[in-house]
Length: 172
Image 1 (cartoon, rainbow, N blue to C red):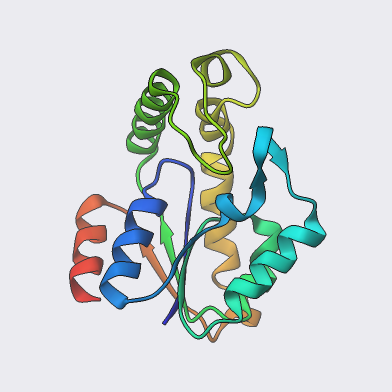
Image 2: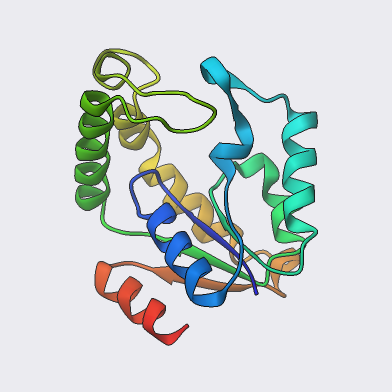
């Protein structure tokens, strides 16, 4: 099975992706881990696209992440795309709590990078601010793109509540 789990930050992509990968015996791949280098340095598109191509060339995987510029690369091989479309208030709450915990605990993420409270509360790189700005845009974009004929071979699953996520996982 080749699955891409998408949704706004805080929607539960990583949690669901890890659970799916474990249940299916498939490799779990986090796009953020492919993209970020030490010191919050971004990969350029050539190196990022090459890493994504290597991952999706495998027979099975569960890919956690959006990165719309990689959509054609991922979805040319994806069999299923799971869109976590949970309510705004829940996603915002989750990202606020996650940001505070990561900031206080200085949790290491990708390539040794750590998040700070300053980054989440006082900068334009705040994930909280990003969710507020992009939640509704992402919902609309994924609703439209899932209906495009070029992706007709992909099974799209839209999950709108925690209950639907649990039901989906239990049926896999």
